[in-house]
Length: 198
Length: 155
Length: 218
Image: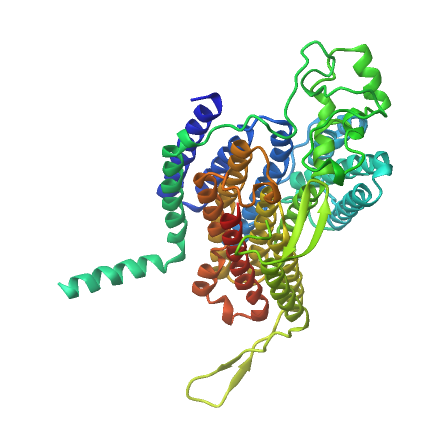
């Protein structure tokens, strides 16, 4: 048995064990946690191939899992008619003065990084700002921005397919689009349950 | 005897028609198939001649992701259909001015190259397998549209 | 690959880099079928349901919520487009991604109905659809590991893809295509917005037909 087979053996046993957990689980909210566990074992099956291609395929796999999780939790909240949390945010001096500086630094650093992790860094900055500074979030605006980012991505894809000479423009478009998309998505995830929808 | 079978069948069909139980049915199938997979592991041998195989140069500043080439030249990439993407390899070798500066002055750019534009992962995700990424973003978009629709709907 | 009995003759090839979509006689039939149902979803008007009060002549006409309706129509069209992608894809991983997209849009169609039982059914289906992506991606990844490629063009007719990978793929598609079971039970076919539910059945049927073609070809 080579390394691939040993890894496959262990992973498939893990898949079976996690499915046993799903088989025995009856509570709806716990099912979400178990499902997340099963998704992770699916990613391990891709990782086992250990080429650059497999590394690139993990990203779609991960994104599918995360987005379905986001949707399922929202569905659960609607299904159970769970109320919005109603409490006032705590007031600490640091939370009033620090957010603009820290958020500015994180967003600038995120833009320099660009790409997926840059979006995550900038998004964390925005989440911190929204958490501290009240939440007059512009839900529709953020959604529109991420929609434009999606369109940019499609444009970049067609540049790659039709005009391969302009690959530099396409790479820059894709990198910028993923930065904007991940930033807005993360900012929304942080604030979706609080504040009112403007 | 027939009555007993009929009663068993009724209980079974009643259980099956409760859709909360279908998750358990699918989980049972999943356990079965995973165990079948475990039994078939000796037949699953790794194919050595992979596309986009990994090459690692430990002494490079772009350590795990160094695929050769300097910016604006072509790096060697083993794509599935090189004829379909005539500029394959350019994105792999590309570095932004900032990351070019970092790569030449520090030994720490290796893992962060994934975040900058350019590099082997961008080559695969955007160029040669671009359709995968288009579908992936559409999935994210759709899931987010459903979540925000449910969030904004007044009961 | 077009000499195989199931495929029929080659009609059209669409190249996207490493992912080369193909239209054989078989997949073109599925493609046209899905296109017809997209057109139906676009032009269909939902029925106004009536409730008759027992023992009297009174009749209630139920109101159709315009916003829910527009959302369901959007999701039905998106589901149709995802089905078009899935039936014409020439790559195992791309096929599984399109199948996952079909699963998500199916949930969207069902979630447009604001009813506790329907939402409960959508949630339970969502769990199965999410779990099924493990087997979908796992099947594609196992095929990649054991054959060194994902393209159906390279794999066609060689019989290289191991049985385990095929089993994973079929089980994954089963999970994503399980939606009609939930719909039948949750009685959404009689809820407002019923024409769009048709798309769930069509997409499930088509991805089953396509995965059968794939496992017989590779």
